[in-house]
Every structure is written in C-alpha cells, then in structure tokens.
Image 1 (tube, helix red, strand yellow):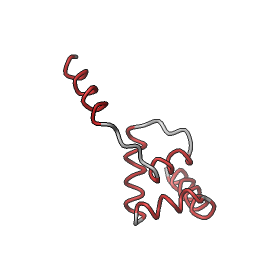
Image 2 (cartoon, rainbow, N blue to C red):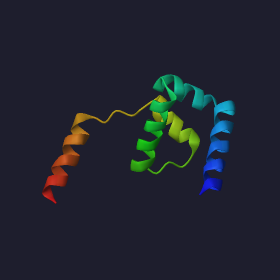
Image 3 (cartoon, one colour):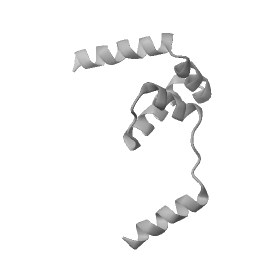
Length: 79
C-alpha cells in the first residue's frame, strides 16, 4: 500500500510541474484541498479516461439543463 501511495504522490508531482490544465484547475478551485475534493467527486461519479478530461471538467463544468434534470427525475420515479 505504501508503494501505491508513493507512486500516486510521484504522479501528482509530475502533473503539477508539467500540466497547464492542472494549473488552470487549481486556479479555478482556489485551493489544493478544494481541487482534490472536486477530483474525488468526479472520479466517484464518472468514468474519467484521462487527466486532461478530468481537469477540463473542473475548469469548464457542464451545467445540466433543468429540462434534462426533470426528465431524469421523472424517469427515475417511474421505475
């Protein structure tokens, strides 16, 4: 388990130093703590195929339309 944590830390450090998307996501989030919470939330609810996709979802979040949300809830209630 300790090796996995070290690898995760190393990957994080490389991302911080080389990714422009990371920097923009951090600016959008304000603090690293908030960025990590957003990353955690997105990774729990969605399949993320790349770091770029993850950071872009934080930088430019997609706002659901009220109609889509109402349709989803209506279909959920039917089941």
